[in-house]
Image (cartoon, rainbow, N blue to C red; front, side, top):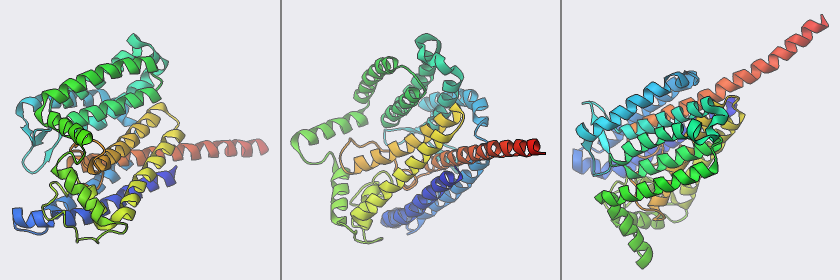
Length: 378
């Protein structure tokens, strides 16, 4: 278990180091033009990476069992925060609310995702077999999924809201919920998500342009077109770090949501595959931790965190390659950003603690029988 925790820690650390290199390359031109400083965005990202590593270390030292006790107050607070952001927070690019507290701004939706995963893990353990009963178990858990996901959807943050529902339903399935209950609820969520997509102009435009591209050929928008050009020009081995053409303002958000295209351009097909394999390694280690964890809460918490990371990673890569509509979701540990990166580091810290805590429990179980045998011999 300790080796699995160390694997996840080192994997996330390596991805963040790669992120620093690619963010520097992808943001330098924009930083010079916008801020008259080659290192402006890089310095900002470097600070967040340092903070994130500190957060990862702190959370890896905190016993994960304590989150059960505070999950309900935490989810109530984040629900209130999400509600208040609808009236007071700034809307960025028509897709999500941000809270600015002067020296730092964050997106409450990122915080809500981790808190909901923690709360669902606690509730599923608490309900036990009752989760298979619609009224006595499943409905209560579904209530929190609806509250948080709807508040995120109407931020508006449609992609995060939909993915959070997917993560929650997979956790409920793993936790023992009936497929019929999940299927019926999923149909209702699909209808609600479709309505939300049509209500908000930015999401409606993304879906229609994507469908139009599928029907008539071509690319969904200028970002996807330039991303594909970058990926294609990288070839097998890439053009080399710092030699990207797309980062010279040809590709919008090249250091953020579309950073995977810069990875493909500078590091080539080989580099892109290595990055994706790194996420698969993290996912495999996380699933093994979940499988070996003794308590239900720890199992579901490890699974929920691991599944959310791999899901966001491959959705981001799918967006850059034009396989799904543009979502505005960052590439975990690599994209420029603050809230998402720090929350990811906290999540990895929790995973590491789950691994180390259960490793200690295994050692304790192995030591106790040996002591008993010695006493009998005497």
